[in-house]
Length: 132
Image 1: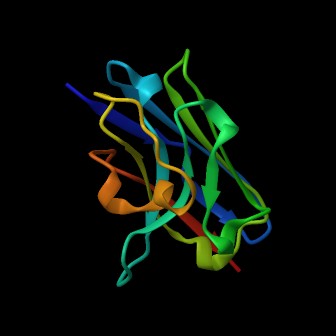
Image 2: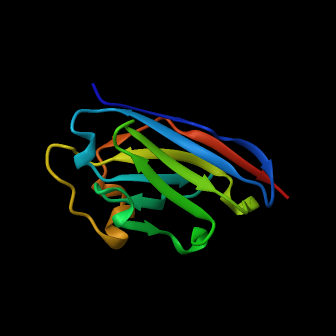
């Protein structure tokens, strides 16, 4: 059974930092691409950052978080991370971890790493709230 469990969300003031973590119970995890999505009330789910199967060789970020957020993965520990610095009120959302089907090696690159329809498995989400 595939499970993705996020943690690390919380409430911070603008300018603060949070580190989100996602633990994954999935076979052949190292074949999958991984990503963080977020969804604010009344808005569509947005791909924030994605990473290819080969660690940080291939990453993609939405423009609004470039230079502030860093996605990384530890394949040995089956963990996906999102370091979020210089947080802004507009970063407030539920953040979700997602994985592609590990049945084959993921070849996504660039913006495709942040396309919702490319991902098969999802966590339940962790709330991030940034106050001004």
